[in-house]
Amino acid sequence: MHKKVYEALNWASSFLNEHGRDENAGELLLMWILGWSRARLLSELRTEIPECDYRRFFEAVKEHVAGRPIQHIIGYEEFYGRKFSVSEQVLIPRPETEELIVAVLERVDSYFDSTAKLKCADIGTGSGAIAVTIKLERPQLEVSASDISEAALKTAQKNAVVLGAEINFRHGDLLDPFLNEKWDIILSNPPYIPNDDKNILSEIVREHEPHSALFGGSDGLDFYRRFATDLPKITNEKAIIAFEIGAGQGEAVATMMNKAFPHGKTEIIYDINGKDRIVLTQTLIMNV
Image 1 (cartoon, rainbow, N blue to C red):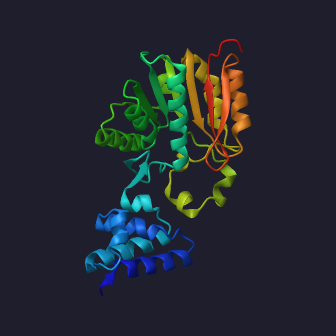
Image 2 (cartoon, rainbow, N blue to C red; image 1 turned 90 degrees about the horizontal axis):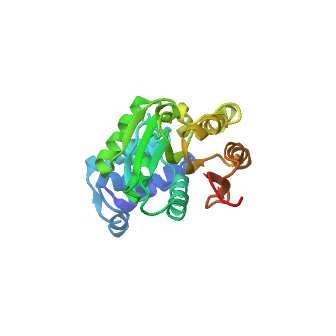
Image 3 (cartoon, helix red, strand yellow; image 1 turned 90 degrees about the vertical axis):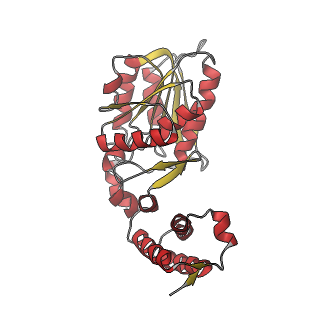
């Protein structure tokens, strides 16, 4: 049975809506199957879809309704204008994390001399989205990235190669792979969801993303405590440290970082939705 583009989209929109899924998923899936841009999709609404493509589209929409993330169906997520391969072994990059990149780049440019040779580490890199983006946006940085998951590192390495970013990848738990060196910039989007919040997550996240990248102990703050203890051992006197955090965790994480770096400046940065999203520390501020 042949369907036109608009008919396929109307069916998908209704079907997704009925099952509590985002109606825009239909557009994304059809663009992927046809290899079209959104502009082309909207300009060819009356074009007939080949039957084999429509069957793929029908099955993909049903798969998403059953709980599989769109990004796992199509195999990638866009982050900072680039496509990153994703799988069930890595956290799907979120738009909020782009705000971490923006905040860090602004402060790197103002805090350090433009000719300085700086070493940057991304802890718990997952898909490599943070490390690869930072390297491509500031090629002069020497960037390393780590993860405790070897499967995640393989995905990150693939993304770095495809996107042309030279990254030194290391396998290990949190700061362990970096303890014998000094660093100028340390970034992390660690697991920060409290363990007891597991049941209020959407099934798409709970059933398909790695729990090791989601949950951070009873209050979600376990990894920040470990960071606060060990970071002073591996940072240069003048450094930038930036974390993504969960909403409502800003004051607690900022307090930890103020204790770890009493001569620095720690700020809580709010995201586009007005939620505390980033804690950023500049470790040495004169005349404090």
